[in-house]
Length: 297
Image 1 (tube, rainbow, N blue to C red):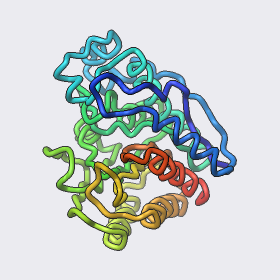
Image 2 (spheres, rainbow, N blue to C red; image 1 turned 120 degrees about the vertical axis):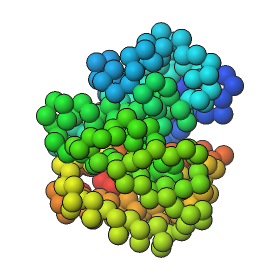
Image 3 (cartoon, rainbow, N blue to C red; image 1 turned 90 degrees about the horizontal axis):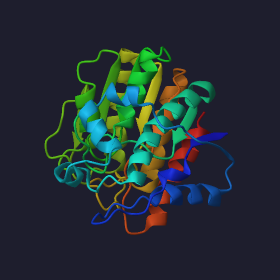
Image 4 (cartoon, helix red, strand yellow; image 1 turned 120 degrees about the horizontal axis):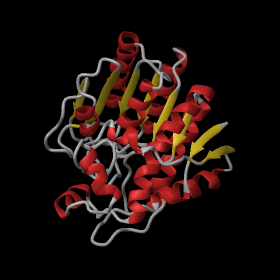
């Protein structure tokens, strides 16, 4: 059974002056229903502020919660922080945390949002307000739900915010495999970064993943994986620079799940990036990711 964390407030109208549209999060649910694959839907609660403050600068958290994010930070985020944006920015970390809790019961669960890996301590960036991956990982460890967490970031963009927020922690390993020449221009330092050349396709990508992931799992021995499962490495993605096909994404996700399952490690995924003019095509890529991960349990 596929377990999906979703909240109606994940979906929000586009904010004025921004190209970013939040309707993807509703379209993904439509795409899931179209497949007729059975799934259980679970609604998250907003993340308690104490856990957001533990990762982000409380002054920045104040700006978000009071809707007073300065224009320069709003530009860096990519849209203004409205009431609805603020609410979904609290729900998304709650969703990633809940997906992790469900994964520890069922083996796999998906947050149908999240993956806000560009958000930094004192500002959002790259369509990310709060870093749900860092917030959830920190809370899970602080509450004793996990001792060692791997954040596996296979979005096409480097997880610079996650790397910065969690730098120096021995109990959280950040692994980012991304397009080297893509956003952000200035990369942070993850525990392990692998930057790929433009146009990297299925075979080369999967070979690198197969050479890297088993070693990390063996050496670090995590008891939970938070998987940033962006579908923007796809060759038709508007903001990608890689050339994976649908079959390549399928093989990527199944490989991750099989490696985790073989070691008894639960996996919670976040949606991450996926961009294109054909909104339903992108939504179907995200939905397919969740379905195939659940099939490998």
